[in-house]
Length: 428
Image (cartoon, rainbow, N blue to C red):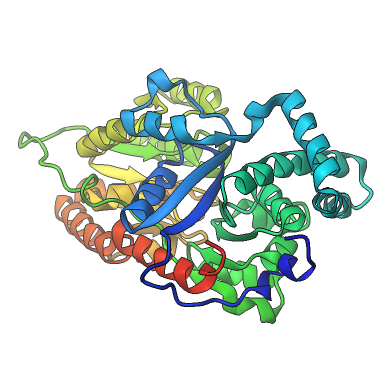
């Protein structure tokens, strides 16, 4: 395990799995699991298990809610997830001391890699050493449980921990990269180093892959695979709406209440329509630091806005079933699962031309797209939909067809499973 060859991602040659081989085994490393805003982690892991994989989850942080607030499936996951920070400072120190004493080469490689990441910057070095401590905890747990491969969602700090696990313990790792945050500061997030060391990389969109190609040398491009996210069509499907006509259209937006999601642009667009006499109701599903500012704006302008807070998957589905229009005015995105869920339920969608969203929604065919930051363009799109029920219906039906064809969870996890088998067969 301690040899230099075992540290190189290309040192293990892929091989076809035998029919008598043990089930495919891997660890999913996540920043927070389960998490109300990232339910697609749970869906992906459970679907992989259905397809024959043995998947264990490791989470840097504890769940974002108490077990009493979770549905049964999330409680089941939380109870068997390995939580790295649960070791505490004393546990981390004990594992570090044990590793230094019994596996000094492991400790030395991890420490040197962490110090190189710090680049002699005091703050960056402190963070790198904290990530190194977490990497020792995770690597020790993986060793005890016989795991050899780590898969990581997102390319930020959680992937830094995963890269240090690989550097120290010699385990291979792969990434699912979403963007866009890590693309804005590739040096801060060590994106090039993570891409170069990874065994293979899954990109959720062609746009995402293009950004990694911009950062990484061409010899690493072939290990980048586009595997799209998806929704479970047995959970998100069209619901029968009440037959009585509605005088007030309901616009739903699902997403964290943060500036990058553009909820203020949505409220500004609704204010423009309100001033023209249109009757609209807005529901914002999600929690976050922008709530106070959004509430103040809604009060000042007299806009009908219901702040629902964070909701479970099932609660969100029920709210989608009542919505007439789904709007997401994001400034920065990967490819929002919330949009996929709305489209699968035949809710006409309006969103922005950023990152991977145009790969999901073709303007005028599967929904409407507007420039990010333009309240006027968003108001115009909402006006079109409010005045034309036939357009709402046609875009809703087309959007559902688009998602079922390209963003279908069982189908796309099948593609994910094929990549795992082809690229990491000797590690799982």
